[in-house]
Length: 264
Figure 1 (tube, rainbow, N blue to C red):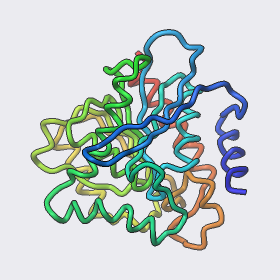
Figure 2: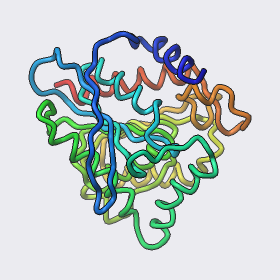
Figure 3: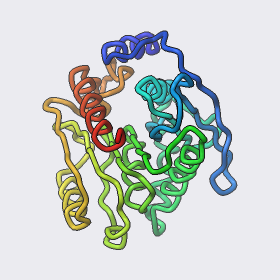
Figure 4: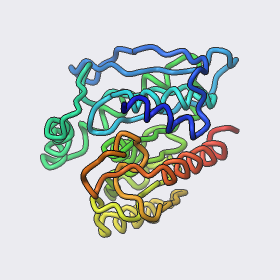
């Protein structure tokens, strides 16, 4: 049922369900951790093209992230859905998802963001080295947990032209990060998302101002956390809910942003 909802929702965004896109699993590593991402591209397009890294929610690399990668491939990008947790590590259990995401929070409290940044960078390295990718035109998008990871990757000074977190956990750059940030930012946020505190938003915006980077933040009225994912249509939590209008508008905003920044 969830898969049917996902296909229908993406079709509403202009995604052809029967479009021909090449997809393949890609094994790679971050340190000693074996990972397996998901590559998607249109092999009818000639020459190098921009690459977009897709970073998953706290559930792991599931069908939703893969569907987004295929959608980006249909738009003319090489898309790589990264694996942040380990090969085959996917769950539908919120308690387990919390533990998987929690390992990054524990690392954070122990002195840094290194684990999250390293895992995201490993995925970006795979994308940048693909022969169809122009490594000077890279972007990262992420959802919820993945939105946080996309921000952290940009803060680390990664070679990104653009970064787009969808309903992400919003963190601020460290002062030491500010001179290194290269990306332009489009932050897509549910105006009524109770999981992100106002002080976190203020800290993020202040950090981006101090970094003197190109940034914009779009709020979607009435939207809460997880508003892009059709699987959240049946959520029993008032903090997490699919919003078809916000999902469509946010994807259109990302599309226009990428047209400006990547398709030069």
